[in-house]
Every structure is written in C-alpha cells, then in structure tokens.
Length: 480
Image 1 (cartoon, rainbow, N blue to C red):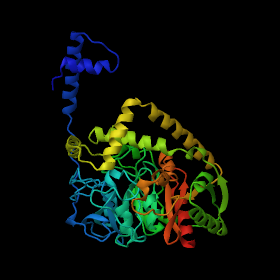
Image 2: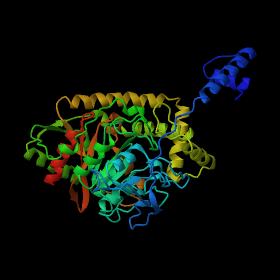
Image 3: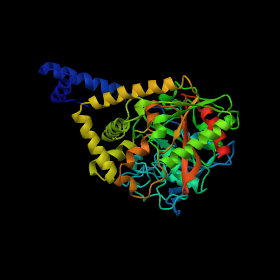
Image 4: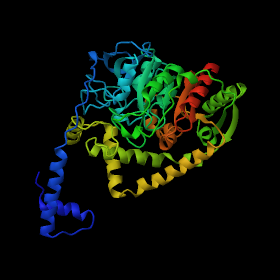
C-alpha cells in the first residue's frame, strides 16, 4: 500500500512533529515497507473445531435461549452436565449476536472455555439470551426480548447473563456460561437464586469471547450447585496460548475437591460498606448467613474497604471508556484480545456504519466516546488511581482474613422497569463491581429470601485462591 505524504504529516502532528516534503515522502515509503513485510507473514492455520448440530431457534417460556443446539458427545468427567452458553461466547456453527439486533456472526471456532467443557464431556445445548453487548444488569436490554425470572415472576432475573441464570434456575441446564464485567454473573445469580462464580481476572481464557471492557471482563459460571460451578470452572481455567493474558496464572486445579472440606480454620471479614449499603431485610439475611458460618466454626471479623463508597461513577467510566474504544475500533483489542478479528470486525464495522444498536448501547457509546475525547484520558487515569487505592485496601483486609463477605446485591430483584426509573441502577453494582476492579475471585451463593425473593451472599477470596471461596460457599450452601 502506498501512503500519501499528507497522511504522514497528520500522523506526525499527533506527536508534535512538522515534516518537510522530503521527510514525509521518506516516512511514507518506510511505512509501506513495514506493511509489506508484516503482510508476508501468514498466520498458521488452526486445527478444525467441531460445530454444533441441530441448530434451531430457542423457544422457551422464559426467553432464556436464543438458539438450541447440540455440541459434545457426553463422554468424560462432566458427562452429567448440560450447558447453556451466553451469546457473547462463541459456539461454532451457532449465530452469535451479543444480544443485539445490529450484529450476527456464525463462528467457525468455539471459544476455549466451550472447547474445554466439551472435551471434558459436557453437552452444550444452547446459546442464551443477554443484555445487549453485556451493557445491563437486569435482563431487560435484550434485543431478542427480555428474559423472565422463573423463581420471581414479575421481577427481573438480573443481567447481563440473564438467559444463563434463568435457564439454570428453571432446571433447563445444570450450568450456564456467562461473563462478568461489573457483576453480570453474580447479579443474576442473586436475583434468580442460583450460584454465580467469577474467577480471578485472566485465569480463564477469553479467546472466543466478545469484550465489553477488557480490563474488567471475566468469563465464569452460573450453576445449580457450588459443586457444579467448581467442576466447570476447574476444567475451564488455566493458561491458554491463544489468550496470552492467561499465561502468568497457575490457578488451582482441585476446585471440586474443596467442596466439603472443613472450614473451622478460616476467618471471614464482613465488609462494613457492603452491609451498610444493603436494604435492611437483605442485611439481616446475610447477617444470619454469617452467624451460621460462625456456628460452624468460622471466625468472623469486621473489615472496612472505604473506597467502595462512591466508586461506581469511576467504575462506570472505566467500563464506558473501554467499551467505546473497542466498539469504535470495530472490536479490536490491542495487547491481549479475545482472538476475534475477521470476520467479527467486519460485522461490527457494518453495524457502526448503520447505527442499529439498541437505545442503551447507543446512549453509552455516544456518552463515553464524548467523555473519552473531551477529557483526553484524564478521567480514566483518575479512575485507575482510585482502582489502585481499592486494591491496596482489599490487600490490607486480606492480611487478617481468608475471605470477604457481603450481600451480593443490596436489594432483592426489582420489578421490571424499576431500575431505570430510580437510583437503583448504580446500587446493583455497589458490592460486585469493586471486585472486577481488583480482579479477585468471587462467588454468590443463595441463602434465604425476603418475601419470597432470593438473597445472595458474596464470598471473595485472594487472587488465585478459588478453593477457599468454594469451601466457604459449599459450607454455606449446606447450612441454608
């Protein structure tokens, strides 16, 4: 490709350089040489992947599934599990839309997490509904229609992994794969009365996953039991050369074995800020859960994480700035990306030309692109400064305890439409989003209810210490 001197001058002015005509022509030729050299290197062909069969529209009373399918032969340690996969995680041969009417892409390869589960004997039975591009916490922002909560009619199931949560809660599958940027596994787990497990950041491969905000995104599980959540995460986690961000992790491989292990030697810290923000009935329910652990021999302390107060506006800017950047670049994530380039990038490029996104994605994309441009990154840097302070506070808390405890959600599942009409939306993130900012593993376990609506208890462990979270979560599950 030949580069025009004026294009070179424009690039140079970004860095304060004023080029002569000769310099511009010389650098244009240098850029062309760079590109010619790079394009001579052909990526090696990847081995073929099995595609799902019997692909058909998903039709269920909850609107949990976008598509039904079959992938896997049911032979292996997970042969007893049927799995639903969130619509932003690739299943070969099944249309992927990320919950949007603006895009549709049929992947030729499955995501690493899907391949690992299938290799272990699990059967993928469908792709589940979600809030568009994972930008929602209720299950109401789905282009394919809102998802219903099977255990709380008239109330939201939580999002953005709403379809996976509803499918698990209704007993349609034992396990649902989902993603968690600010709580999108744990929110629907709490509102729908199931288990939601977010692993340590980057311990699970995101190859074949469509990012919302790369520095916050986690791929994890929703399940009917703590044991099934642990079994699936145990198979999914670990280094993946196709996602180099995983290569620095050596996560535990014995998560399922932690179920039923004694907890009498453990100490939990109840987060004061997490309790204070919760509605009183939810706070009382979680306090009873902590008392049950104490009666089981677990030591209990109170801890404080001051930066959790008032964090959500800055968290929202990190999410929004990263989302706007990824969307504006047609899905390209520099550094360690999801593994999607073409043809997914072409699908997003066409969607960006036509502006066919839903109202919430439209609003968030425009606002955050504007903020990103007008603040020139200053607000993003400020958010990262606060993020470092939060990490330091959580590290200090872990000097005295083995796990942190809070309500997963400060409230029970709101009625449809309630979140958008009140200040409830930021509150849905108050106790979950901080641990996307820090990257710690966190699990939500159902414990009790308030007027028939489920309550979730969140347990947070040290980085790469998922077994401790599993031990405590399984103990709590047995005591509820």
